[in-house]
Structures are given as C-alpha cells and as structure tokens.
Length: 302
Image (cartoon, rainbow, N blue to C red; front, side, top):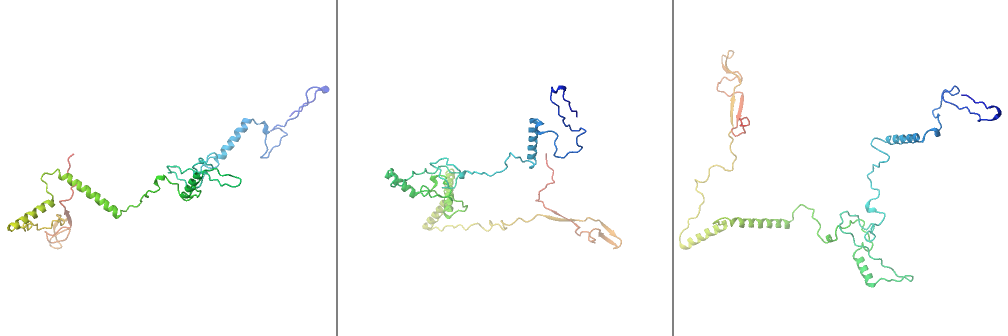
C-alpha cells in the first residue's frame, strides 16, 4: 500500500486514501467462514441472478427424483361438479335437489314462478289461474315445491318414469319357460310343414296309423280275420348285446431275456433268467400288443 502526499501550496487533487487488499502484508492470515472479500454491490447483477437460479434448481432437486416444485402430483378435484359455487342456469339448476347424474338425457323441469305473499305493504298482482296452476304442480311434485331429494339420483329421462325396471335376474320364470316352449314348437311346426311340402307321397306317422286302423276295421266288418303284426321273428332278434362295450382285442406275450443252457450244478437244462427247468415256460419280459392302438411309428409319405 502507498499513501499519497498533498501537493505544495494546498491546491490540486485531494489526498488519496489507502485501500486494503487481500494478500497484503497488513492483512490477516486467517479469516472467518462468513467473511466476504467483495461487497455485494460489487457483484454484477447478471451473476447474482445466475446464483439465485442455481440455488432454486438445487432446491427442486433436493425434494426427490421425479418431483418438481412447479408440478402438482395430486389427483383430487378440489371443486367437483356436483358442488358448483355458482348457478350456471338459474331456471333449471336447483342446488342439492338431486344427486348429480351424468347419464341424464333431459334437463329437469324449470323452476316455477315465485308465488308472492301479499301483505299491507305489498299487493299481489299474480293471476289467480296462474297461482292455482303453480300450487297444483307444487303439490304433485315435491321437488318443485322446494323439497330436495338429496339421496335420489336425477332421472335419466322422464319417459322412463312408469316403465318396468330392468330385470337383472338370469333365471327363467314359469311364464318365460312356457313362452320359450311355444316359440320352439311354432318353429318346429313351420319347419316340418316346409320340409313336408318338398317330399313326394309323404305320409306322416299319424296318417299311416290311422290308415292301418281303418283297414283293420274294414277287415273285421267283412268277417276276415286280420293278420296282426306279431313283430320281428326269433331269427331277426340279435343274440348279443348291441349296447355293450366292445371286447378287448389286446394280446399278451412273454419273452426270455436269458438263455436256455445246461447248468452243471443242477445237472440239467434251465433258463438263466427265470431259473425254470421247463423250456416252454413264460419268460420274464412281458409285452402287450393292441392292434387298435395308434401306430405312431409307421412310415409316412412326404
């Protein structure tokens, strides 16, 4: 540091002041953590703004991955539609009269005109016929009279007021069974008539039985003994049960895995696998053959 001296005669520029610089011999060797080198006013405004932006960005990042202070992650609707704070249509919108129905196709009835109550300071100017009409409508519909149905949902369409409710049951009643049977019989009769008209010389079973009975009656009246149909003869009746399960055609065979050889200890011939002294005895390897089984190993043509 260097101090300037005043010029002779007391004229000229004022005395210069000594300025302290970091790192000079007169400066301290250690500083506190909160000590700053420059005055805040010496920093450019753009640099200060950049520092603020960096701090704000670090603050947002510190809240967690995928979150931001400017982004609202809530899914709750703070002001639902059924609880509107304003009346969008004063002629139709009566707050809390019905539960809101998103499927409604027709708006509710308009609000009735206000029926004034005359007194000594007010004269009733409403027509008596109009007053009677409004009174009758209010008596017929409690909602028009101001009685709210807070637990009832707004009707979808007034035309459905007197209609039968949708039946959610999956069981048929006796009447429905009868109707289904009648429809089936009508369809069967119509199909039979349609098919019979295409057949040549077709005689129904009822007509054949009626013709046979008429022929028997005619033979009896003429004195001829009719030959009654005694049914199939004994030779025509099968001797086996036609409904029984078919017998199995599987065959079983055995084979020796050993050899037929002479045993010196026993001093006779025997099988080495079963130790049998009979050459025609069954072997230890049994094989079952089914001629009706699928043959997956047969050669195929490509």
